[in-house]
Image (cartoon, rainbow, N blue to C red):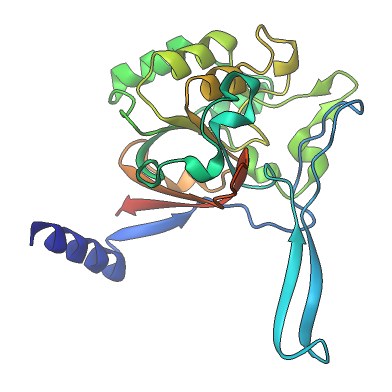
Length: 260
């Protein structure tokens, strides 16, 4: 009975707007930005639709498509086996369902990133935030807001690359290690194309967010939108990746429940 009452209260709150559903997902289309690796490496596919039928002689009453997409295109969920450090850990279909619904905190670094697109979050930033707010949530998400979602309309602006490579914000190597190995969160979410900073290829270790998070059986959520609509604490995240058997990740619909 208690459980039924809790669920009834939730549905009532959703219906009357006292709990708002905020969509954190970037819609998938052919113009969705994708990560660009050096040419010697394999590249991910851009999202594409292939029409099967559209109310015509191929299918008179229905419209449907095949689609092509990389696992890590658009708003997506990184599973532990995405990185070599987690190669023996879970694929995306094996992520426990009860880990797909979790609380989140949102740390805002938009002012710093406006001044420096290569801005790196340090452990001291996280500890200072905890001192002023609440501890990072056990079994929850750490969301890093940088304002980068405003660039998602353009591949060039989103990747922000020059002759020296991409310039996007992220975590320092020590901060990535701390989040993965010492903090209680289950993963990290960002607005950029991946969890790592643009210069992370030159860090030690290279791509430390991927290396430490995946190796610690934690997760990544990337290319999030609308983090500005979330409070610093109190939001509950529903992350729904496609359960691709053997997959290293998948596009995801990511929603936030926010009490208004």
